[in-house]
Amino acid sequence: MITNYAGISPKTDLQLIERLAAVLSGRSMLHVNSTRAGGGVAEILHRMMPLIQSLGITVRWEVISGDEYFFEITKKFHNALQGTAVEFHDDMWEHHVAVNTANASSLDLEADAVWIHDPQPAPLIAHRRGGLWVWRCHIDASEPQADVLHHLASFCRNYDASIFSVARYARFPGVPAFVIPPSIDPLSDKNRELSAGEIAATLQQFGIPPDRPMLLQVSRFDRFKDPLGVIEAYRLIKKYNDCILVLAGSSATDDPEGEQVLQEVHQHAAGDPDIFILLLPSASDHAINALQRAATVVLQKSIREGFGLTVSEAMWKGKPVIGGATGGIPLQIIDGQTGVLVHTIEGAAFRARQLLNNADMAHRMGRQAREYVRTNFLITRQIRDYLALWAVLMRGSTSPEEFVL
Ligand code: UDP
Image (tube, rainbow, N blue to C red; front, side):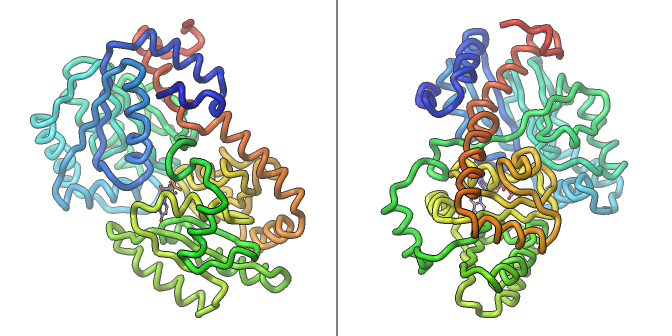
C-alpha cells in the first residue's frame, strides 16, 4: 500500500500519486520485458506492480520468449548501444522482428498504457491494438553504434514517448523523450531497517570480523565494475589504515565472462585474509542489506554503469559512497556532498582514507546521501513520474508544463 510510505517518502510525492490515481483509477497498465527474474528491471517491477495495483489501476506483466539466438542478438544490441563495436547481419534484424511477431500472437497486449522495457520487445509496437505505448530504455545508450540505433529508432518513432534513466542516453530520434531514473524500495528486504543483531548474524555467517573498518563493493563480477581496481585501491589504503575489504556478488550464470572475472578477482586477492570475496546466491537481499549497513565506506568503482542501483541502496543506509564518475552514478552522487566521485584507483584510495580518518565527514556525507535518495530515488518518486507521464500523454500532450492536475 502506498500509505505504508507515509513518513518515509516525501509527502508531496504521496499527495501527487493520490491525485494521479484519482485520474487513472479503473484503467489498465501493461509492462512487457524479457525476464521475470534477475536484473534491476524485474526487481523494480516486482515491487512496483502491487503498489500501482493498490491505487485502483489494473497492472499486468507479460514476458516475451525467444530462442538462444534471439538473446545473443539482443545482448549484442546492448553492447553496441554502450559503445562496443559489434558486427550485425541482416538476418539478425529480421530475427529480432520475427520473434516479436511470434510473441505478439501469444501475448495479451491490450491495455490503456503499455510500457515496453528495453530493446528486446521494442518491435511489438507493430502489433499495437490501441492504448498509449511508451518505450522504457534502461540501458546506457550514450554512444550507440549507428546501425543498431537506426534499427531500434525505426520502432521507437512509433511510440508515444520514450523514457531514459539519464538525459545523455536519450539518443533516439522521432519520439518525445523523458528522463525518469530508476529507484529503490525502502520497504524491501534489501533496504528495510535491520536490527544490530540481524547485521551481526550476517557478518558471523560470512566470517567477517565486526570490529574493523570495512570497505564494501556489491556488484556482479563484471569488468565494468572494476573489482580488480577496488582491490588495488584497498592495497593503497591498507598501507596506512587498518581495514578489511568485502567484494560481494552473485554467480553470473547468464554471463560467460563472470566466472573468469571471479577467478581473476581471487588471483588478484592472492589469499589476503582481509579480503572477503563472497559469491552470493541470487536471493540474497537480506545479506546485501546487512553488508551495506555494516560497511564503513562503500565503493562502486565502475568504469561504465547504466544507473548503479547499489549506489542509492548504500546511500539510503547513510553510507558515504565512493563512485566512479560514470553513467548514472553522478546523478546520485554530488561530489563532496552526497558521496565522492572518482576517476582513478589512486583517487578512490585517497578519498577512502579521508573518510576512514574523518568519521564526522563520513557521517555528514552519509546523512546527506540518505536525504538525497529520499527526495530523488525512492520507488514512490518513480511511480509518481510514471503515472504523471501516463496522465500527460492521455491528455494528448507531451509537455508537462501544460498539464494541471
Ligand atoms: N545485486 C544482488 N546480488 C549481487 C549483486 C548485486 O542482488 O550479488 C543487486 C544489487 O543490490 C542491485 C542490483 O543487483 O540492486 C544491481 O543493480 P546495479 O544497477 O547496481 O547494477 P547492474 O547489475 O544492473 O549493472
